[in-house]
Amino acid sequence: MFNPKTDRLKEISEKFPDRVTELEEIFDKQTNVYIDYANVRPWATKLGWHVDLKRLKQFLDSFDTVKSVKFYNGTFDDDIKSKEFMDEIKKCGFDVKTKPVKKMKLSIDVSSIASDSTAIIKDFIRKPLMQKMDLETIEFLNSKLKKLNEQGIRFIEDLKCNFDVEIGRDMLMDYKDNGIENFVLWSGDSDFADPLQQLIDDGKKTILFATARRVSTELNDLKEKGLFIYDIQKIKNFICWKKEINLS
Image (cartoon, rainbow, N blue to C red; front, side, top):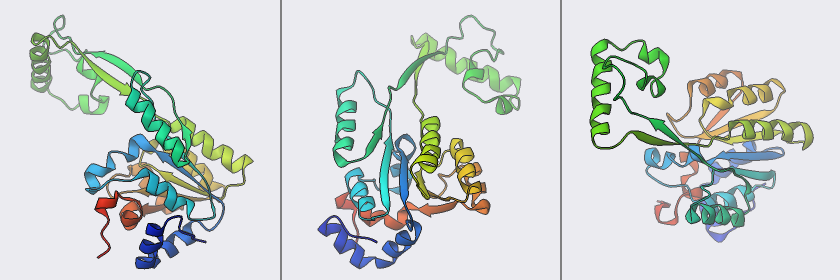
């Protein structure tokens, strides 16, 4: 049952009742939502609009079968804005899961290697693609790195903080211990194929909320086995920034 938490949601739901009906059918039993924010955040570039997290939480809370909305995102320990953002997310009522973002320095120093060596670029290019590269391409890439070295750039910083293990674990625990029947994942990452497959095999409803062309091949393949993919553009007006709402 949908019971809008705000007057704005009530107004929009009256304008788009079919969307509410669709989601009532999706959230027909006890439901948990899992938001992989590092995967969701870049969708704005493709969509041309932004997900307002406060409005999203209010919208999901309007469905009485949604029991928990879990939010996964890394935190920069030395960044005040990062911590303030996570505090705001907690205030919205999300079940927040976080851990420090790892900062890794990767060498791009080619000063001591031969021009045709793959010693450095192999750390940035997957092996199957590397095997397709000819000598000229390898030498060209090393020459570009050499120019960066001449500018004093010998390392790049890479950030790492994924939650595929935590999300997969929480899904399975919610199934075994908390009586959850419907599992709604906001992501498009192939790392979730295995836990979703297990839930499907066990007869649970699994739904992927994503946007077109942002879903991995591995997850798309699960559609034939029971994974339902819901395009979030269908609920834009319920969850976008206020200035991006279009009720015409």
